[in-house]
Length: 388
Ligand SMILES: *Cc1c(COP(=O)(O)O)cnc(C)c1O
Image (spheres, rainbow, N blue to C red):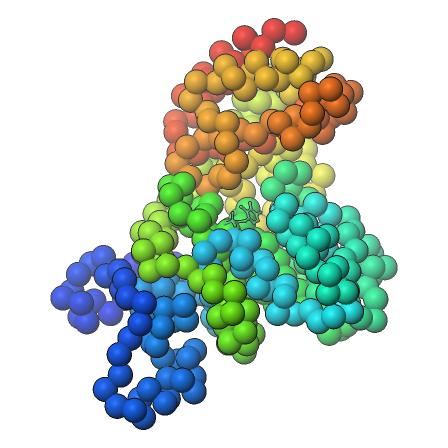
């Protein structure tokens, strides 16, 4: 399906709403029936009928159809956060006593689920370095039911060979789930590589304006229907009609925003690589990246996230750099219009900072929609102020 068609037309029945170009926000919690039999049919299959907006909603459905098409998936569900999509995907595929193989350092709240919540139900997780397929082979146990991937990771950009993992999992009858937030379906379609379930935080690039929290989970119709009828409806974490509308609006400009950001990011990487205050830059589409070949093979592009190791002897120098930035904001998240930075040392107590540990000097930068010169000038004056 043509991407322009998906974004501009798919699922939009304009003749049903006065030929309005922008779809209506169906801000209704429930839907009425004319006959008892219609109501009976709705109760029998809520996945096929508008009954109550914790289930299906017409505005959300427009978004669902577009997002599923972008993922090359049969169907998708949209949640009110990426974390909710992760939770539903995993919960739907484990039972007491099962085992999960996860890549190292997945998204924080995925880790908390694996470490704190699932063990209460006897579900255990083995973390592995997903860069080597042999680590998956070694970690799989007879009761492994889920392989959890995140490729690339959003701090060190570690990748997994998606085709190889999908093949291995199929042989073993294990469900594969991937967090695809970094790439979005514009730059990576894991379902094409044989992965079963794909999720992303739509808070990031789909929203694109730092004004909505949302998550998407895509997969087969059978799997989505099963999740809808259990986790989705019982947790009650579906997206609201208004936020769905914001995401439809975000989608209109998604490809062009990503194109702009990808181009700017390469310029910013170039600037940082030559900078005397920068020890290294980690970015999947840079030739120095350890998995560059695999990145080029399975990703159509790399977006605005990169990490650089700043040269600093003290934590105060890093703090000075960050606090001297006048335009790049110090904040979590990414995918919006505005450039952002997180110093790794913000998660470390000052007295535990060790300048010899590269990880402590990691800076995660998100390149937004600003002009490259504007960002470079901002960083340059901050580098000058940090001293040595
Ligand atoms: C932000 C993020 C999430 C969680 O998404 P929310 O929308 O914040 O719940 C999951 N995975 C990655 C990689 C993220 O960056």
